[in-house]
Length: 200
Ligand SMILES: CC(C)(COP(=O)(O)OP(=O)(O)OC[C@H]1O[C@@H](n2cnc3c(N)ncnc32)[C@H](O)[C@@H]1O)[C@@H](O)C(=O)NCCC(=O)NCCS
Ligand SMILES: Nc1ncnc2c1ncn2[C@@H]1O[C@H](COP(=O)(O)OP(=O)(O)OP(=O)(O)O)[C@@H](O)[C@H]1O
Image (cartoon, rainbow, N blue to C red; front, side):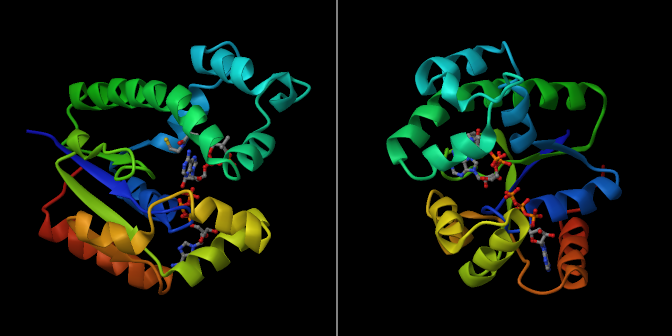
């Protein structure tokens, strides 16, 4: 029987870093951030709904969505974020379920769903076990500012749109502490793969 595992964390906590390690080990990862990009491609239902609600001013010249502009709106106005979520999330769930079924049909033992908002969106019913990638808030802020070239205010607006990472610890089946270096993180991941007897 195949196992479905949820990988979650917060913005810039290290989910992609860990999902890349898992991919290198042969595991199948379905990434909600990628799904959220695919479902808003030009002409898709969610794309049309976003243009209707947010106006053509959030489009770039090539008619794709200007993610920087949309991000600046939704991470500073909660009601706009909830509106965007209500458009994008149903399509993301559908996309991820289809990918998951595809992976199961192709005989995978383990399918990992990388979902940043797994707890906030109450999606744990989709998975058997959950892994949380944890970092302290100061490190999260620093890594986010560096990676995205955000000001402190821009980074804090994004972090505060999510449940604090420390509140996710008691909700997760396993926690990987990503405050240290990459080698320390990979060691914890390897231990978890062994103790859960995970195979691709
Ligand atoms: C606002 C958008 C356009 C900004 O795009 P951008 O390319 O700058 O960021 P990206 O999509 O790579 O997301 C980066 C991280 O931001 C966080 N994040 C994104 N959307 C949200 C949200 N609605 N609420 C809280 N955190 C979010 C996640 O941790 C995510 O990993 C985009 O994030 C979006 O469409 N968000 C709504 C869909 C969503 O909730 N995606 C998250 C996974 S389903
Ligand atoms: N252990 C680590 N030590 C130093 N830097 C790290 C470590 N882990 C991740 N980083 C860096 O921190 C940043 C955030 O990591 P990553 O992109 O993996 O996070 P994420 O959780 O996938 O973020 P998002 O949800 O925003 O896509 C990246 O620039 C990454 O290179």
